[in-house]
Length: 348
Image (cartoon, rainbow, N blue to C red; front, side, top):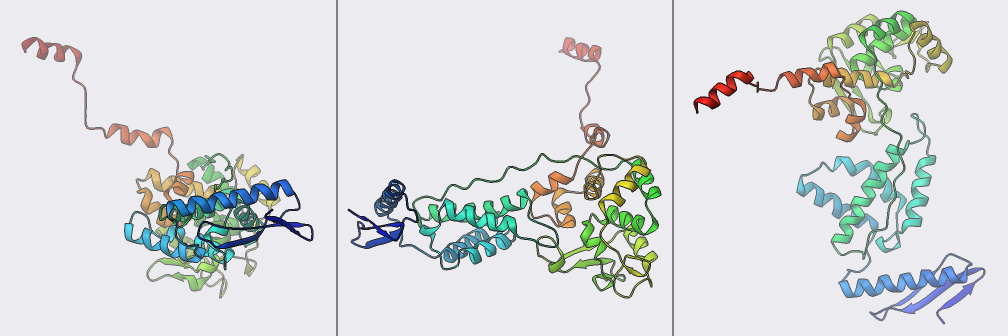
């Protein structure tokens, strides 16, 4: 019998096809479950031996292999995976590939979901990007025969894409209803697409008035990377109006840095403007929609908005019927009058 108990926990031991003694905890007090865990481990090692799976490797080695492979393929920037895989590497420090199973992945991503940042807790879409990066890494390890099979990874369900932006009439009403100090932030948000926290926390040292550029340090940006964009004339106009109001912060109220907008205050502004179903973050949707209507390529919009993937861009940039009309009218083909077409066919 290969099962034995240590305290209330079942352990198992056996010798694999290579003559190596395997001794591990089943991490359960349920004997039947421990038997299934042992059988599963035996089967994986048998398959590993038959398929010529390489000796177990550290997870960190698999990450390096995966990023090097992606960099050589040039199909997708390794930057898309870097932040997420750095987090997984720290989470699975001193863990080998064959030790990573579904339970460990679920426990780790649950820890990630509980993390708190200045942006709040991670949303399902953010957690899914971490899971997607891990899946891609483990699938590469499976193809390289470093593991028998990659663990199954289930993603979170994401809410439907929100489609809401301001019309020109709504913008005018919103700016008219907002107090001057909030109207300035709204205008700057519509001109840059920045998130509320980035606008509220904006410092003069991040702004280069000469080159008309804005650089947000990675510590203040959502994905942790430094973010740099050129500034439009409208954005520069808003900045010039704020000059000499504060030595550090761009936007202020009564000589102090701006506080976060309270929900009740925002509701009051919206009610005064006669606008419903609109969140502050929808200003970012409005900016992205303006950009795509103006013909901005999605890959350029991705850079300007600081998104990691084109899929994220698609969640923010929207078209209405009229903005699509220009592309329909640009079609370089026109039908001939029906009677003229009959005449041509008759002559033939």
